[in-house]
Length: 173
Image (cartoon, rainbow, N blue to C red; front, side, top):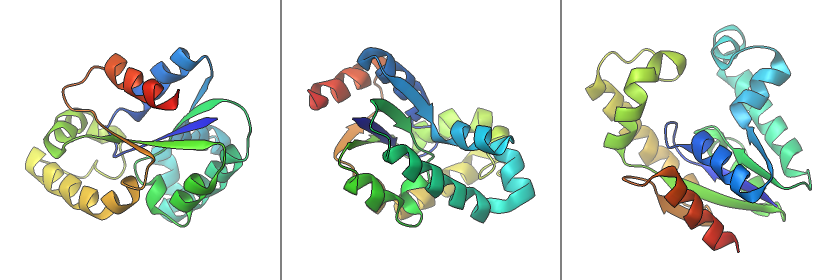
């Protein structure tokens, strides 16, 4: 089974994914890191040198490659992964995949993302926390219809990673 973690950037997909994979005794893959490795570039370099369209094509290609794999895996997707092309449909159609939406509030996301915004191409240009909050709010509104299709939704605010992992494991077994 592939546990596919969905959610906005900063929702904890990578942190929860690593902990969940350790708990389940399986591999963990961060889709953004996988894309970066396959292209021998950082995500920021891919965006600046090849553009978002190239990135999204690579994202879809590699997501589908991973979904065809039959090994046990925890996969942290990028925040926009389910919203492009047929990615969400492909996640839901994959017989070996279970999707989990890590739902995090806008204020919590802004607190997590503002200090690290320089390393995130989509928000690096935002100069204030208010601008970031407005940006996140709009994106969450646009992306929620995709995220809400996940088979499991977990509110992450005020929860420790171990609590979230326990909730996911309880639903898997």
